[in-house]
Length: 522
Image (cartoon, helix red, strand yellow):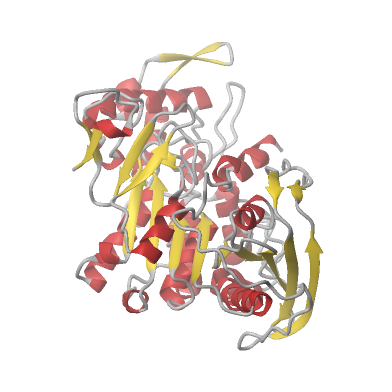
């Protein structure tokens, strides 16, 4: 139970949901009064039918959310302004998709924002949605017609036990596109004119959805903010089970204390590669710390002295290396706990990351009772290749041809933490390189990637995470100010300007290393 709560917090970290002043680069407030909050006539997206439209005025006030056991209550949003709350339900024949649109009654900033989901959620109906309307946006999200759990996808299989292709299509790419269509239509109906600018805002699954929009529907959004994107889904969703596969195949289960010791040693060895000791590995790909160097050392774990063995080091080496020839592994310095349940001093676990666990059970094996702890190396390769063949074209979200998005004038701003413990940073770098090879020219003119050393999935961690990337995107779209850096900060107040890929921040050697002004991009 505790593990599930921790995973949900990692997939959608509460600290990352409310931006400091999201989209505050400009506030082009609409001057015309809105229409009455009513059941607007909403045109149905192609292939869909509108089932209902429900609208209600909502007074200003604080918005809180109930807990959904075993998960904690989402972070409340204070001071939400009065708004019109519209829910549109549509269907493709067998599903029932809800799109919720919140429209500020006053001081609309003339922008539309769609917010994405996390794990197996298609959208965020809680903190992020209400933070958007608080910041002046007409803001919308969708449930994609999926079930209530972001972790256990009860919607994956039909009653006959086969993959529900309608709902998979919704989750993969259709729901975000229809969210854009319905949300923009409702916004235009309420205010009497279309939004001047349209934005996507998502992380993790929401980041993947943003990339899907750029690839499949390049005209939907003027600007796309896509953080920690779970792109390359057909590969990543299996590769994320690799740490557990290694532990179970090797029958070796290092404790969390031992795993932490390997990361501590890796950071000590590679921390100063950027010119400053700050507890962060700035370029994990260039850190060659050998886990074998810890063999024979002891660590205190749960009150017991535990000696690190050669088998422990072999497990860590293979997790860091990843399934070679297939996909990437976990960066040195990133926590192990998100992807695998560590052992204890009294036993073993080796349970894989639950999103990967579900992908293998439901979509590959079509058997919710399948035991992923029994996957050996040969079976892992079979599953990895099966996922590629069956699902790359459906949900891979890895098409590097963004030329149509570029021609449409869209801007894609993406960031990814170096200590992302759930979605491998190198997968995003790999995609960026493929875009450069495919599109050519100055990719930074429309697609900028910022790597955040030490930051974890969607925020948090020992390194600085962006403080208001949406504002940077708004400034880029509306004022043509392409962000050379992204302001970022740690929980303890240290600041750093993240550099646009392929540049990285380097300490000048002078001044407080906790201040962004003392770093330059090189």
